[in-house]
Length: 361
Image 1 (cartoon, helix red, strand yellow):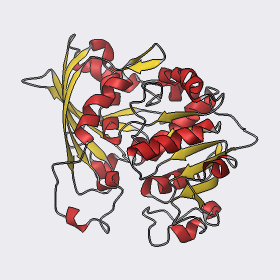
Image 2 (image 1 turned 135 degrees about the horizontal axis):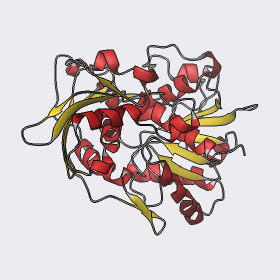
Image 3 (image 1 turned 90 degrees about the vertical axis):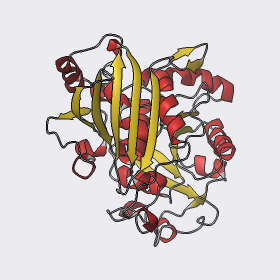
């Protein structure tokens, strides 16, 4: 690309916003030109606004340190400076919905890390390798919002990335029942151990709202577009438990699954090895070359060792074996703030740009 698209990060001072800043530094297609946050951060440089609150191991990129943070509620001002935005704000659901629609109505595409619009019928919720076709519903959304260029697309819950891709590669064997327990990092709550000392040497067997998301969102991802709306799939039946564990990054899942047509272990491993999606076909900048990596070792994948596979954008799987109650069981792992949050949203933006949905204003 001769000229990079101009990007705004709305909610740029939080943990996910910081990940966006980090990932977009030196991005081949996109350049951060605006950062917006709450009114308390507005008017400060980005470096000043995150002083004492920078949560990543890497330093603040030089290119954004002197960007003056804007008030996210001043939609027209922020939108006038960018071609599209990423949104990762901490607000009430109805406030997020209104804010994202306001940006979209200015003609600005919105790639959201928030959960507020995941069930809006004409807003696609996308894992780019799994359901890229859902972006076609954007045409209907634009008509509703009365804009020719603006729209909203959302990223799904971070926990499901650890097992949905592995199951998606096996969909033609028709999974009927899935039991998944997820063991989720504290960064999924926007925290580190300094912020949350109670998590040291501790496990908390509850994450508010997470189990419903983990059971229902895969069905929407596997759903279909009917009458200008995404209708969720009726199967498989999924039940989950979501548990907070004392690790910095990485969501691990233990999964049990039964199938209408039980595959052999060799067939499953072949599907995982060979699976490629639209991002791999298009060779998108953030796409992992090997989307699903299987470990033969009995003690892998491990969160600390394997969460960064393919720059944190790959999914790791291991311990595939037959089960005495279900057909098979396995372990999955994904990086929750890369594949599961900011990185997944950047990949969605790359897909939408490549497919012509995001262009320079």
